[in-house]
Amino acid sequence: MHRVVAFIDGLNLYHAVRSLEDSRLEWCDVVSLSRLFLRRDESLKAVHYYNAYPHHLSQSRRQRYKRYTKSVCARGARLVEGRFKRKGGTHEEKETDVNIALDMLDFAYRGEFDKCFLVSGDSDLKPAVKRVLANFPRKLVTILAPPGQHVNDFRNLRHAHRGRLEVMQIKRIHLRESVLHAELPQVVA
Image 1: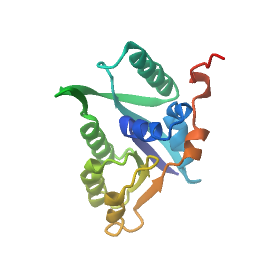
Image 2: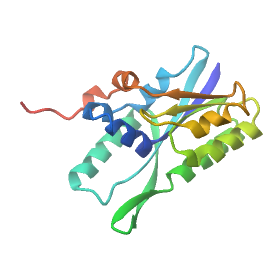
Image 3: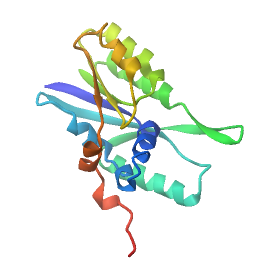
């Protein structure tokens, strides 16, 4: 049985899902979503969810973030928080890519997975994926691209690592199948 660990870029996934303009899909259970991509000979050992607390947003948005992350963690995901940094008139998320890259390499070196899922379309993570594939010839990596994101940079790596790097697209149907139904906000008629 192949052991799988999922590394999920929360903001990358959130913004892609938000572009679908169906707020119910924003309540995605990342553990259930990861399980949808498992093969028969694979078992999900861990899900690491990387995000940043939105201290700069309204109280209702912060509460929503807390409620969502609490629900995701209750289903078995491990939250790894980065931070937002003020940059000019806006806020920029920091540390997520670095945390994912370091954890992916650390887990590979410790032998904690045979295959990993990377849920992100961020090409900044390409060096970490390359390093895992180069240093661990028996490990497999699957890029699960969030809806609407093109991950051509990762697809280009497939030629150098035949059969060890797979790129798949997360579709609306996958999100529908993994919604946290009990956590959806109540609609007042």
